[in-house]
Image (cartoon, rainbow, N blue to C red):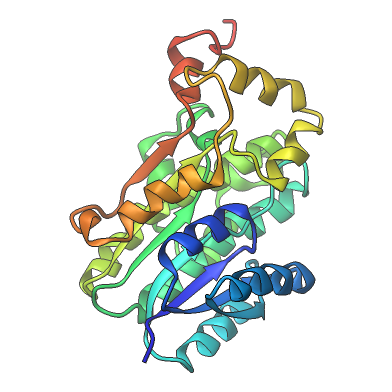
Length: 276
């Protein structure tokens, strides 16, 4: 029987990671856009992977549970790659918080209940969560440990406290990272690991939407002035995921790995630093 792997978000980063670590495994690929999901599944299948497309809405616990149940038809779930989400230029504040923040928290929680021993997961957040104003220790703990069905009721996530879609996205990604820290403790009780990758300026269709959106000049300036001097690729994210999800990463759990060409460093200490 093949090892079972859940992948959410039929995008470039998810596909790059899956191609790196998914051969020989049964892959359940979940995405809200079924046409896109089937297209990516066919590309993967034609390359020799065993991929089952599945219509999944990350903002719905019911939908997440249906995907998990489908995956369990093929055996115990050992791997999770969560690359699903929406960007500030693609969605409203409400949708960003419901999908990227709440949905990711639910997914990590539900998979953590059934992940098999020796299993591991990686979720994709964003360097954006590192650029926002620092939260208090109490607020960070709220994002990490508040029961999932109460998350969207937190005071810091109310409409009057969220400035715009970028701020909502930053809060969601900060929550992803804090949630990984809290959930990895529970995953560890099952002998499994969970980590986070925080990329930025990675060339994907989502990023291209950002380059062509209202903050396009900001992002183009970011990758021009970051230490690497260029945007990254999905395969470079997959390099990190491959380490985290292999035996070489066996002592790594609850961590977030920035892969941003040094943009965060430049934001705080270099030429990308906002004028005071």
